[in-house]
Structures are given as structure tokens and as C-alpha cells.
Image (cartoon, rainbow, N blue to C red; front, side):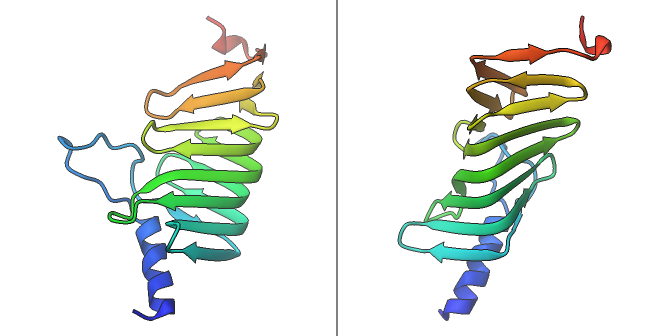
Length: 157
């Protein structure tokens, strides 16, 4: 297989989610993942793809921006197993925005761990901490050393 054809095939594998039947696997990320960047470096031996320069990873439900994104994938299936995003990380999901310097997505646990001054915004409400863990499927978060500022009265119940 020629190198350009392989790189294109790898990119298509990474941008299309491979999902088993509902009985076999819970759908963790809805729809395909599309990743764009200034450059892509694929390493077939380590089963990684390094995206650098204005990286944008989009799914149907959320978008993650960063300076650099290292994607780990399963050799046999091409499934994404882990994503390490570094530099000016920003996750946008609906009205929520989470920013940090680093974020790691763990596919098997369907969670994202934010480190490096993580900050979550939802309207005027702000949550900060040392480490934020967002459980995507459950739509819940765990924050270490949290500080919460609630400004929107409609969200206080």
C-alpha cells in the first residue's frame, strides 16, 4: 500500500466511528469524529496519529479545540482508545465550555480529565479546580479542589 493512500485511509478511519451492535457495545461518542489540523503525523508502529496546529475535533454533540492532539487507536479495529489534547484546550458542549491546558479522553471509560487550570463555564456560572473529570455519557463531573461561583439565579434551586 502506498504511503499517501495509507495516510488517507488512516485519516478516514479516525474520522469515522466504528460502532458494534447495541448488544455488544454502548455507543460512547455519537456519530463520526472529524479531526482537522495544520499537520498530521501517523505512526503505524505505535498506533498513534499526532495532529498539530489549530486542532479541532468534532462529534455530533461536542467540539474540542487544542494546539496539539495525540490520538491512540486500536490496530485491528481503528477505534480511538485515548486522546491527549495539549495547549489551549477548550471543550464546547451546548452552553457549557471547559478550558484547560491539558485534557485526556479515555474511550473505555467515556470520560475526559482536564488538568492545568481547568475552568468550566455555563452562562455566568463558573467552576474551577485542580483536576476536572467529565463523564460524558452520564453528563456529570467530579472536581478536585473546587471553587464554584453561581451568578445565574435561575440555575440555583
